[in-house]
Image (tube, rainbow, N blue to C red; front, side, top):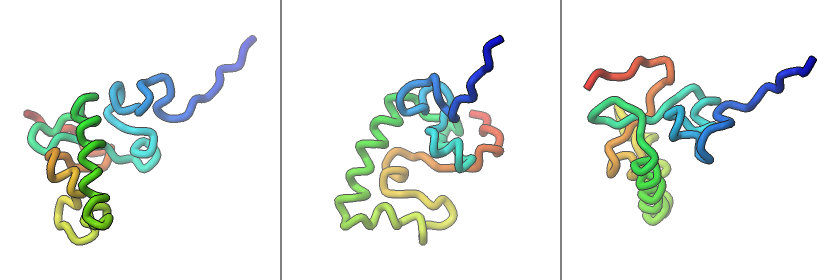
Length: 98
């Protein structure tokens, strides 16, 4: 009788975890998910990669982009989120219909 091993959230998916589940490992732990602001759907692999590159703008402005969600109401977006039109929502929130 073999015992089944428990796996960490997101294991068995693509390296970032985002492609199959719509969430990274950190988002699964924090119970949040990243969605497209216009469609309400999880990001695809290409959009997620471009958002990752867009985070260079967050760092280029003396890291101000990483702090921008503190005073950006109500969406709390980084510069990369504003460029890519993405928002982070609680994972329990149902997807928005297109």
